Length: 255
Image 1 (cartoon, rainbow, N blue to C red):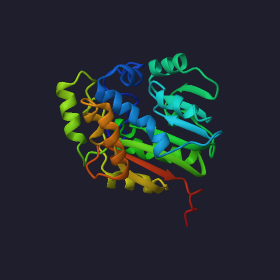
Image 2 (tube, rainbow, N blue to C red):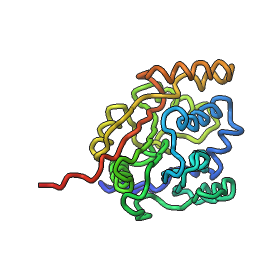
Image 3 (tube, one colour):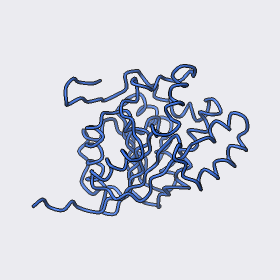
Image 4 (cartoon, rainbow, N blue to C red):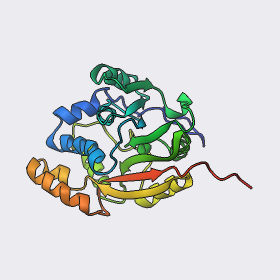
């Protein structure tokens, strides 16, 4: 799972995550869980709409729910995850043309340079150490074509998220997050710095999924109305950060 010293590396969480976890949360979880996972899918209509025939890599695809949604837009999607159970579940559940599931971590797969129009990485970077995040972002920039776009989301630890995580770890019947899953805690400024350091140009960086998932526990309709308001207002205390970043092209040669 992790090594000691400066070259710490994580290739999975400290607890086993079932392969069907994300799909089951979307379909069978509590109202809050279902709304939370539905909000991720709706990023594609609101924040990051694929074009038909785009080539897209979804890094940390989990059960394959988001990758399947990407493919529904007519894109060619490669879904990658280090959890063999999740890859098996995705292959069995979302078998369709133009969607491939592949086991492994991005830095193990040696994907060709400039081979994708888009990349998505949803709630992955908090699961690995900072140097792994830096390496991941460098790899993503390498495999994206010039002008290619990256969608990256992660919890906002300068918002309400630490309270949500604390309460979930103590009272909810979900897998423990702090330390067992989440080892790098991003703020807006930290995420901006990591993306810029990797050579990306940030097109948008904002929060989403603030209060609406919790309102869904009382009324899904009221949550939808609140969600539309949250789309218009970038709350600094929002639970999740969502960034869209562009690969400007090859890095300038060092002098």
